[in-house]
Amino acid sequence: MVIVTGEVAGPALWRVTRGNNTLWILPVFGPLPDRLQWKSREVEEVIRNSQAVYVAGRTVAAASSRSVARAQRALMNGDGKLLLEMLPADLYQQFSELSRRHAGNTSRFELYRPYYAAELLREAAMSRLGLASDGEVVARVTSLARRHGVKVHAIEAIAPGTKDRIITQLQRTPREADVPCARMLLERMEQDLRESIERANAWSRGDLAVLRGYAGFRDTPLYRAACAPFLQHMSAMNQQDAAARRSMYSTYAGALRRNRSTLALVWVSELLNPDGLGDRFRKAGYQVIEPR
Image (tube, rainbow, N blue to C red; front, side, top):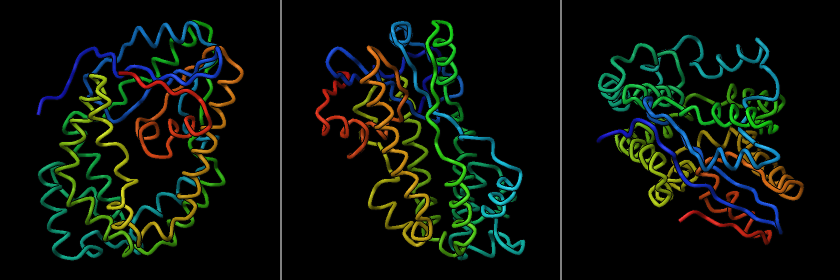
């Protein structure tokens, strides 16, 4: 399958309106092709006429060395055990075959807990496909905003206190609880890689119809059922997701009330999923105009 490269405009903007005020939403997606260059005249014009721009932040504050060390321990197997010892023989064989095909070998994954090892393998496979870029969309939007004197606000992904609770719960989660979720991720990996190429190409072309068909796999019953033994230990993560959605809606609704024009970068899945940002605005009585 051919991966789109070169200069692309990406998807058209969504609009949410309140009286004469407009919230413009750029659907963002990742990972994108490494050789893709994002450039949109429409977005630059919106930024030039806006009073605020919102982009995704990383953390509220830099993580302490202690938090980093705790997170690393939580992501690894206890007592120096290897992945070979944590997975059933048939699943380890499947992991090894996928690893040789898409990452070269399994040695780099051996110390990690099953769920995270499967995630790392997927990342390595994506990198080999040339799908490891963010398209520098956030960097370019930030640069354009500064050029036009528009204030940039970072929407923080997770607060330090919540992060510590998630790490604590992950540390306490038995590694055996990872196995059903890791199995599902490995069984879907070839399909997931094909779909990742299709999604990246669709974003590059601005094809929301294709993206709509792939939006939010991790919110599907299949994922939740397979990963239930793992997720039942991770209530802080579920609470964080819900809190982040509420905060996002509140922040953007406030910006829409204050500003004649605002630009926000929002993940495609958050726009398209049921009870996502688009539906929240509709239910609150705002006019939501999707691009054709």
